[in-house]
Length: 541
Image 1 (cartoon, rainbow, N blue to C red):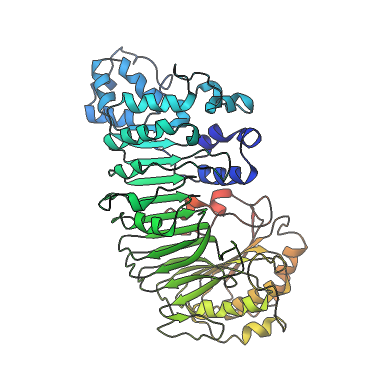
Image 2 (cartoon, rainbow, N blue to C red; image 1 turned 180 degrees about the vertical axis):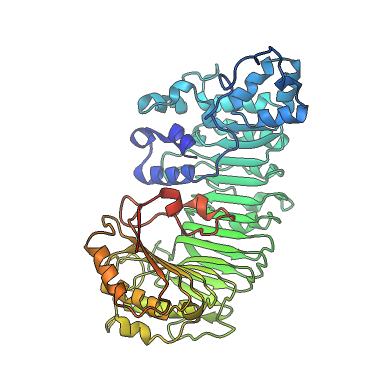
């Protein structure tokens, strides 16, 4: 989605958006799934006007093939096919259309600064003969094509100033059986008051829905029989909604498989009890409680910056992650021992909790944890968390700066965190007998990090690879990398064939980011590995 994000966002930070709003909008736009149509190879000029022998073989293809061709074109190119012949006109009118509003921008808008800013609807200059810019162009396309609409991306309009169009757009989409809808309000600030029309609930043909930067409609007044019977994928970005609204929505998605909640403006109390959900992702939200129970198909529970909260807002209060019946849960993270209160079954996991059938989730094979290894009260929880997942084969550790006190206790506790501390933690089943790969990100070279790595190396009998990603500003050849190799060379490795790999950070600043696209892809075997999204330098040793 980077190309569409570039079209819609360049210049808006200076002219309209506050810094926070721009950050959330860029994150949402650049991480949306890619549309099935692209402007990379426009219809005009893509092939010679005529074959060498002058025979138009494309027009002779079966109608079903022609419709497939047109459905893959940007909307302006798809519309141009209607002038070729009567047959092409029929093809155009019967093709499930892809509408991406960014593709309606004139070619001259691919620039920077004030010129592109004016083309996004704040200057009343005409795009398609109408007086209201991009929104008017969208209205014309929705009215002109009889449907169905295969996929619709509406990302570039400030919806507060186009309230009259919203209801009409959704009426068209509902009547013309839209299948995939990406409906994002281009708000100026986080305090915008754009309300999502309840007409959205009439789009019952949807299989995929992403909505963002709206006030969610009051569900108390919506007919109880409303449902999304075919919806399999749902993304919610920075919505203002009540807990009961979220419950109402999820209860009307009987075949939902993938759920993303990003940047919620109200505390999330999410109870996953669906037998259809396979993936749940909660990012940058105030998460009071996430409960997994009777979720027989859930494969992935992915958390990123799901903070605790109280009446004031973000706080040191823990949020609860409760795991009940989830027999297929394979991927779990990032759990934060200093912030997440982990509950398995009816047992709250504490530092002294030992493994038992009532305190373990044996299905989890990939686990990610975010922890301050030098903060005693957090580090003491790490062995207990690891014992809860005895069959983990891949372990991700995000090492946090002990001096950064955004969450968790403000005291590091008493006693030294050295190698002896880890050895006294006792046996950990996944470490000793199952972990084959461990990744430690944001490595700063502290004593606590080195001791933890040595503990893993000396106890993990089947460990095949340790991957270290240095914190920003360091390379494998500098003092931190050299000291790391020296310390690990002195370890009594449980598996002498284990490989140590040291990566330079691919990030431009300290701390890592979350890659929505990688995490949300069920075919991706490592949803916590963002290096594939960004790139980076690696040195093996």
